[in-house]
Image 1: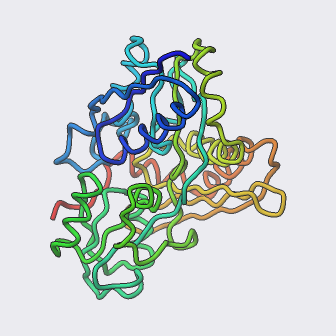
Image 2: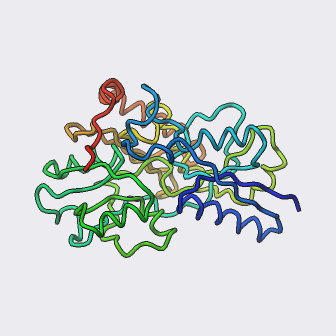
Length: 318
């Protein structure tokens, strides 16, 4: 069997993901190496994520660019990404060979003292680096003080334990993968906090012309996860958003149809648009585009233009 080289970020969670895929490949008889690649997003740790990147780009590709460069150069054969970090428009020389079975896509409320978002006292300090999470928090709890939260999962949880924050919001999938669920007090329902497009799924990226590697990785592809995330990413792409903009999308199979919930929100919580509808399981991309168009007709373009044009209303540093 051939030797496969995996490109991955060096964070604890990214390495868990790369090693998880590596173990699945080794179980099939492949020889596997994991190559750590430091990305722009990893190098810039003192700036809120929403401020990283060029104007208009909103940080698209900040966790993938250097990995794709290694892929293009042939120094790695595949890249393992958190799908929510992977831009919806790949460069033509790349493709997504597989999307793995999805872990819980929801966000998790983590706290030492409080069981739910609703239980937080007025002016409680909540940490998040996500405009999407910030916006939805502000809708239901405009009294909260939202602060920027950077660092790996351990760093974020340590800051919570040290009392720097009353609560932090993290992806449930990452905490579950790392076995760090003790701080989770609430898995936040979609109607309160719509997840990021692709959250909880892994995307395996390869060179577009590398059919051989694609064949080796085909067993990793989960049909249901691919359909759901294709729907979500189609919506995100139509709205022109990257992983750091206040757009949420969650697609699930319900009653034999693909159901999509989506939101676009202003970062200060002053306006939130929500759209839900069902579509054909065989054409998830169309459903994503249809819901995006519905949101645009209701004013999503005005919200997003305000976000793009004002360099973002990001949480302050604590």
